[in-house]
Length: 218
Image 1 (cartoon, rainbow, N blue to C red):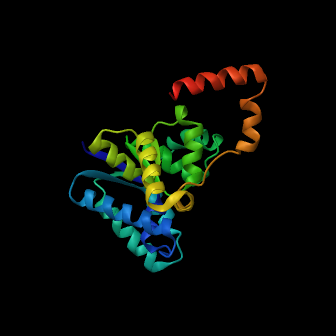
Image 2 (tube, rainbow, N blue to C red; image 1 turned 90 degrees about the vertical axis):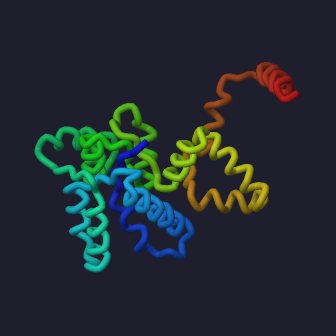
Image 3 (cartoon, one colour; image 1 turned 180 degrees about the horizontal axis):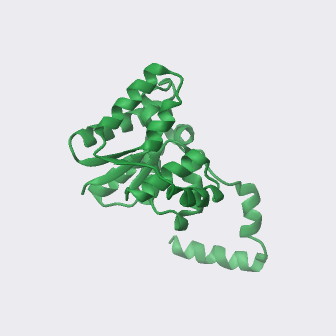
C-alpha cells in the first residue's frame, strides 16, 4: 500500500540538527528510512508552497538550500490560495499556530494519509481534537511503529507494550525509564488526576473491586 506523507519542515531539518541528542539522532535515522522509501516509489512525498515559504525564512543559507533540495522528491505539490484561510482560522482556534495550521490545512486539502512532525505539541493538540482534523498527525518516531504495524499486523498499543517489556528485559526498569523519557514527553499529572479517578468511591467499593481484580489475575 502506497502512503502519502506531508512532512513538517522540522522533519526535513532533522539531519542538520545537533546529532549528539539521542532523540534527534533516532529521528534522523527514521527520516533517512522514509527518504529511501520515497526514492524507491514505495511512498509518496507531498510538498507545498507553505513549506517553501517557511524554509525561505531560514537565515542559514546552507541548511535552507539542502532542505529545499528534498522538495524535488515530492510527487505532489499543493499550493495556497484564499480558500485556505477559513480552514486555517478554524485550526488556529483549536490551538495551532498560524504556520502549523496552514501546513495541516494543506495536508488535508491534498488528501495526505499522514502529517508527520517532530513537534510533540502538535501531536498533543491533534490527540485532543482528532475528531475535527481531516488528516492523521503522527510523530516521526511513530512512523516506525506504523511501518511495523503494516508489516506485522499488530496495533500501536501492542507494539508499545512489547517494546516496554523488551527494554525492561535488556536495560532494567531504570534504563527502560530513561530510554522512554528520551522519546515520550509524557502527559497530564497523575497526582491530580487520581483525585478525579477515585472521587466518590467508598472503601467498601474499593475492596470489592480489589477482590474482582484478584479473581481476574488467577
